[in-house]
Image (cartoon, rainbow, N blue to C red; front, side):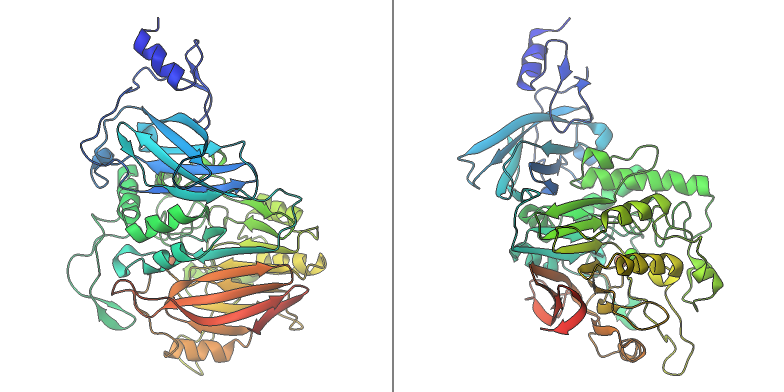
Amino acid sequence: MIDSRRRRLMQALGAGTAGVLFAPGLLAATPLPRNVLEKPTFECDPFTLGVASGEPAADGFVIWTRLAPQPLEQGGGMTMRPMPVKWEIAQDDAFRRIVRSGTTLAHPELAHSVHVEVEDLAPGRPYWYRFIVGDATSPTGRSATLPAADARVDRVRFAVAGCQHYEEGHYTAWRRIAEEPLDFVFHYGDYIYEGPDNGPGERRMNGRPFTPLRRHVGGEIYSLDDYRRRHALYRSDRDLQAAHAAAPWFVSFDDHEIDNNWAGEIDQDGTPRELFLLRRAVGMQAFYEHMPLRRASLPVNGRMRMHRRAAWGDLLQTHFLDTRQYRSDQANGDRDALQDEVVRAPERSMLGQEQEQWLYDGLRPDQRRWHVIAQQVGLANLAMQPRGPGSEVTYSMDQWSGYLANRRRLLGHIEQAGMTNVVTVSGDAHRHFASDLLPDEGAPRVISTEFLATSITSGSDGTGEEDDFNRTTRSLNPHLKAMTDKRGYVLCDVNRDVWYGELKVLDRVMVPDEPVKLHARFAVERGRPGLQQA
Ligand code: FE
Ligand code: CA
């Protein structure tokens, strides 16, 4: 039997008399839970974590929020019952022309996050969105649909950013990204860092004493509640919230969303595989809960699908990769090393067989002017001499330089497909690196171009270009055209014939509100891979 209040609620939710709720944003068409809290009330603002949108398509996008009146408390300070949340999509930021609206449920199983997959919108235009729960209204976010698949598109602008260690600086770079006119943001990963609060004392950074700007809460994170609290801590930052509210994002995780330098089913500490998988599963769940992701990325049995594509009309085809979940363990115990037979072994993989084939199936000459491979770690194969000039040359085992056969297959595929319009973007190195991508052996042909974006905060103020590592790395790698150890992001400004990559930097992140500066600007001509000064 359905009592009348319950019937009214179900009608408000768009439910039929059978008690089945059909609305975008639910995990499926599900019966209305018996424990639903019809009229939630809040003593303080439940929208402390802001709003976000992502995964744009030509007819819609995902809008996200998480109800958390006390974000660092157990359960976010929420009543542990599912509750209805209203959402609205408008053509203007004052919500005079609301074009879609509905009600979804925030479930305690997902930390009261909501992910609404909005549909039936017009292509290629901006929209504004907000949520309402009880008598609270969320901040307003701005999103946009993709142009129609066959539309002619003349320009796309997007930011590449990630590595935002909370303790190591202000998120001013996110504020500057929010101020850019952008079509989308690609977050390459290290959205959170899993390490403990190390206490109030000094530590060392870049060879100098360092006192954290702000601190993690608690020890290293293992449980689902730990990961949720860490995400909530990071997400409480207003500059980060501003960037989420300004444009749709495509997010990916790298290592620190789970554990430093994890690889597939293996962590860095030698933990038994089946135990690490438990940790990986809760890290993935918390990541899903806090990101504007589609239902297709909901973790199932400890796995989540993150490789996907989106296209801006006939201008740009994106390929977002997952270089963590399917990779082989790092060679040489993950210490920087020579590129020996293990590093070159063809069976060691960065992408896993299924994803690698999926990438090549979509990475083919077509009507699109450009293709971008957006992923997590450097492709540039950078030789390093950590002990200075004349010492042994080594390579990172965590980047593509540690998965040389897979790197060779990827560049070989691009070359054999005759594609001279592929650009790659990545991060992880906590420095800007702009590189021509060459084969690791044989004739030095430029096959593609990489913009590796520096960190938002990780590494704190940084050393700029004035350190030994910069000098030796530049001299060892002529295909590396720019590098600097400063915080910031990469801005890609893409037109039909030229791809401009701008390396943006902030002088300091230990003081608030720094201006953004242009460190270097490069052009890549369509049909002619490689960096040119611009
Ligand atoms: Fe990082
Ligand atoms: Ca990383």
